[in-house]
Amino acid sequence: MTATATKTKQIRPNSRKVDRCKAIDLVINHGLTHQQAADLSDCARSRISEIISEAKSDPDIALFADNKDKVFEGLQRKLINLADDDLLKSMLNKRGFTDVAILQDKISLLRGQATEIHDVNIRALIASITPDKEIES
Image 1 (cartoon, rainbow, N blue to C red):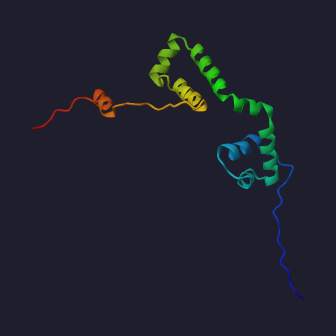
Image 2: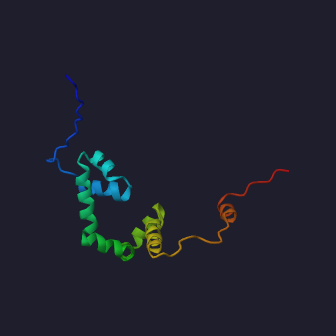
Image 3: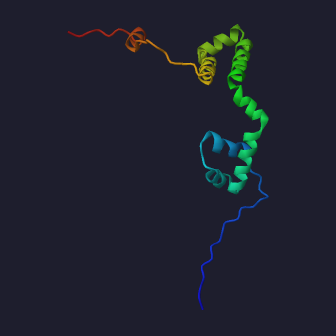
């Protein structure tokens, strides 16, 4: 009598609903493989592949991907137009115009434009904001 080893394959229930947004985020934004995303989502790799394929062929997603700079520019315009004097004062106290500036950097990057700051003298900037220290002789 010979014994044969049988491998059992883990079968995941198909009735479980897969979080599509999570699956897309894991693969596209975090660079996980379809298998890794399947393991984390507790579904089959083929289901993840199907979800990713559907997402990539969605015309709305393709349109957004082709026009991100214009979408972000519109968002930036809305943020600026929403700001009244009181809100601007509050923003400056909390974060300045950081959110608008981040959007501008993103727009520039999407358009292939440089966002680097040139010719900045860090020592001069630091010296201008730190109190003068007395030099001991």
